[in-house]
Amino acid sequence: MLPEPAGPYCWKQTHNNKPSNGEPLGVLWSAPFRTNISGKLKTAANRLQVKVVNLWCNRIIGDASLPESKRLTRTNITKLTKDTPLEPSGLFGPVRLLVPAP
Image 1: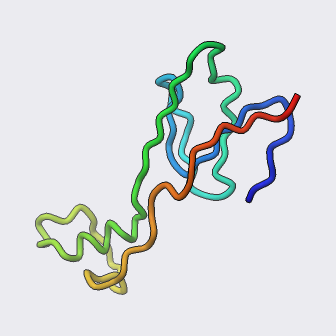
Image 2: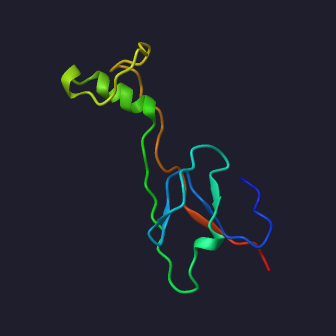
Image 3: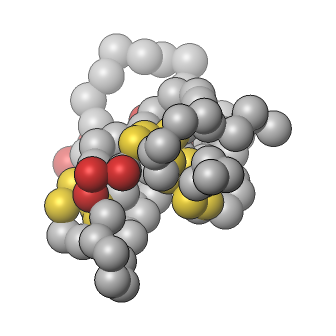
């Protein structure tokens, strides 16, 4: 569990790209998977969207089972084959809005 953020900010915690009210807030691809969204929130209703993506190695593994003409990736990595187990990927927990106590 990550410590709660300190300061007068609102943080969104997730592992993925997240538009807020139609405005992209960036891509979070490494821990602590947080971004400050304080300046992006409205005082009324807000809409937050999370886009989940797969790991690149899983794309390569999936492509290895396709005919070469149908593959989306080109690589010289040979240790990833169609028989390589897929890595866990996706959203592994809830998206949370973290607001410090007043």
